[in-house]
Length: 258
Length: 336
Image (cartoon, rainbow over all chains, first blue to last red; front, top):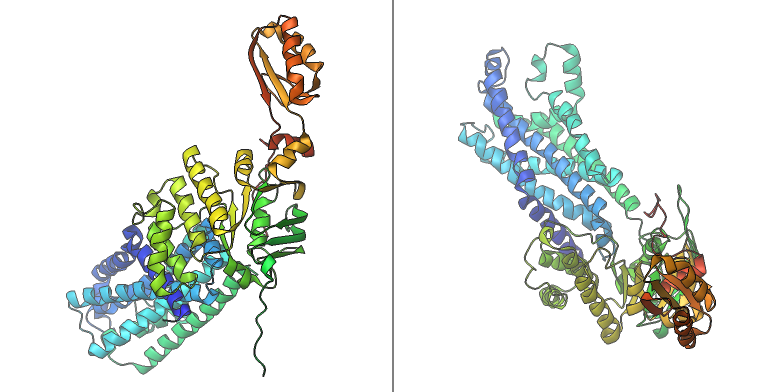
C-alpha cells in the first residue's frame, strides 16, 4: 500500500472507530428515519387510494426517505467530528505530520462511506422485513446501495466543508433544522404530480432532495426508470463534486501551515 | 534533463534553530511576537520563559510552520519555516499547549495513527508503537480509551506522539502545565534523557521558573513579544548577582526595627509579603554582619533565610514585574 493510501486508510479507520465507539451518535441515524417512516406510513397509508398514486403500499413509497434522511445525518456527524478536531487542536496534530490535505478529506469520506453503506443495508433489510418488494430486483438493490453511498459521500463532503468553514460543532448542529426543511419540502410524502398546492409543488420541484428521493423510489416501486436515476445520480455527483471542491478550498485555508 | 539536486542542510545547522527578527501581528490584536532573535544549538534544551500572553505559543506555532510569520526569518533544522514547511515538519516533533487527543481512541490507536501519517513503514509501526508506549510508561494503559487518562498520562502520550518519527528537534509548549509534581518530574526526566542520550534539540516553553531552571541549558525570557534576557540560568542569575536575606520577626511589633536594621545591609525587596528582605550589598559575605546586627538589637526572629537569586529575580530586574501573575488578561492567541 502506498503511503498516501495508508494515510487515507488510517484516517478512514479512525472515522469508523469513532462512530462505532459512540453508539449514542451511531444508532439514531439508523433508527430515527425508520421510526419516522413508520409514523408516516401509518398516517398516510390511505393516500395510496388517490388516483395516480404509483403504488398500493405506502411503506414501499416511503422507504426511499430513510436513505436520504440517513445521509443527512451523515452530514451532521461528519461535520461535527471534524469541527471537534479543529476545536481540540487535533487537526493541528495532523497538520504536523506528512499527511496531505486531500488525504484528510478522503479519509474522512472513507469513514462516511462505510457508515452510509451500513445505513443503506439496514434500511434494505428493514424494507424486506416489512414485505416491500423491490421492483428492480437484486441488481436494483445493488444500484440502490451504490446510490445511497454516493449520497452519503456527497452530503458528508458538504458536512466537512461546513466544519472547515465554521470550525464549530455547534454551528453545524444549528444547521440540522435547515436540513429537515429541505427534506419536508420535497416529494418525501407525496408524488409531485399529485401535489395540489402550487407553491409547495414548485418548491418540491426546485428542491434537489426530491430527485434524490425519486431516484431511490424508482428502484423500489417502479423498476428501472432511466430518467429518475439519471437525475438522481447526476445531482448527487454534482453536489458531491461541488462539496469536495469547497471542502478542499476550505481545508487549504484552515491548514495555514507553510 | 540533469539529475535533480536535493539541498540538504549543512551538518552544523541540522539540529539547530535560528531566528532573526521574527514578527507576528494579528488582525485584531497586538504584535504578539515583536522582532525576536534567537539561536538554539544542536542537542541543547532551550527554555522559553514568560508569562501568559507573552508570545511563547505564537513563536512555537511559527517555528513549527503552523502560523506564517508577518516578518523575519526562521530556520529550523536548517530549513526555512516559510519556504520549506514540509521539510521542517519532517525533522521536528511537537507537543503543543493542549494535548490534542481523541478521547475515543486508545493510546495505541493514537501512536499507530501517528506512525502511519508520519510515513513509517508498516513493519515498523507496531514495534515503534510498543517501544514508545513503554518509554513513556503507558504500556499497561495502551488499550484504554484516552478519555479515561489522567492529565499526566495525556501529556506523556502527547510526548510519545511527537517522537514517533524520531525527530531531531522537539518543540514542547508548556508540557507540564496542570500536572502534579510527580508527573512533572517524570516528564522532565524523559526530556532531559532525550537531549542527553539521543541528541535531540529541545525548544521548551514554560511559565514555571523551576522547570526552566532544572531543564534548560539556556533560557530566553520573553515579555510582550520581546526577548528581554537570554543566557544560561546560572549566568542570568549571576547577572543579578547578589543574594537576598529574608527575616521574619517573632513579634509583629518588631517589624519596623527589623526593617531599619536590614536596610543597613542592602536594597529592600518590595515583592515579598510576610518577610522583611534586602538584597545583600556584600553578597553572602555580608551575612555574619547581618546576624550580629540583629543580635545586637535583641530582635528575636521566627525565621531567617538567605536566598540565591532566582529566574524570577531576573524577570523582575528586566521587566520591573514578578513573573508570577505577570500574564495579561488576553493570553490566548488572537484571531489570525
